[in-house]
Amino acid sequence: MTSTLAQPRVRKRSPRQPLPHSRHGGEHSRAGGRLPLAVVAAAGLALIALTSLTSVLVGVQSIPAGDVLDALRGMPVSQESAAIVASRVDRTVIGLVVGAAIALSGVVLQGLTRNPIAEPGILGLNAGAALAVVIGIRFLGLSSVTGYVVAALVGSIAVAVLVQSLTLMAPRASAPVSMALAGAAVMALAQSLIGAVIVTDRGALDSFRFWQVGSVAGRDATQVIDIAPFLVVGLVLTLTAGPTLNAVALGDDLARGLGQNVLLHRGLAAAGAVLLAACATALAGPIAFVGLVVPHLVRAVVGVDHRRVLLVSLLLGPVFVVLADVVGRLIAQPGEVQAGIVCAVLGAPVLVAVVRRVKGL
Image 1 (cartoon, rainbow, N blue to C red):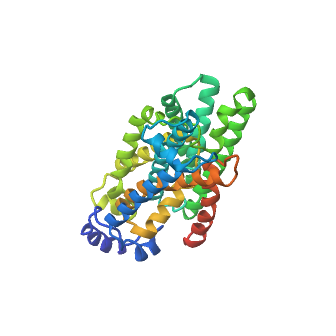
Image 2: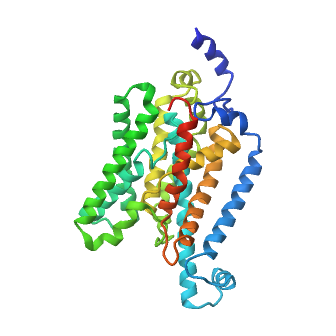
């Protein structure tokens, strides 16, 4: 009876309209969504500009701001300063791309699974991608970023299927926690296997090391061009998934009632999320918690409409990763802490808070 009464009311609410409530954002739906999207987008762009400038100016080695600006403008500076500024620009570009990719992937995974703690790191997608890349490097001689993306994509898909299969074995009522536990188990297994592969080739330990922790340092920004086709497809699939995610939030039956081809649209959105996770891992190794923290922060500001969440996450994800990289450079001088470790330290409390806050977990 309830379903019969609900469907006509839902048909009046197009999937392109904002949702009044969802499982992982019920409280936010009341508190968020009041700020105009244009204001939030402008603030996001300003934050990206500010954090990017900070990333180029700040580092382990101190360089006068004037020399940095001269190097950016192509003015004559010392070779050492030019090289340092170039490396900072490269890691900033990598951080921006990786942050956007993981944040969007997290939004889509949370929406599709209706699980507030779903994200590429927690579900093991990043670890599976890293394992596939390490195996490809060690046994197949992969050396190009394009090859890394293909291997990472295979690893991510394999882990996604495995985690979903393990989740289906558990009672449906505990699906969110079961999915997270399955992802954690698969991630631990993947990291152990990565360690085993590295141990068998200690001469290549340094080149493999970042696949365990995730880092934007030491990357060439031109690698982004190598993965651009995969990245563009992933961005298109995820950024256009907002209406699908809004409909799925109402439940599959109601989504079908709204005229959604649930299986097709779910598959396209999932493909985009996995593709972006693979691209991010191919560039920087497995960086976890970005896809968890950013969507929840965004929902607190713009509400639960996935179209708004996707757009703002596209802006806030890069800010999060670049800031994590900057913090990693400053807290352990003269050394550095990888961005993946800083993101994990910042994201773990958020995971605990979400688990405590959301009913049913």
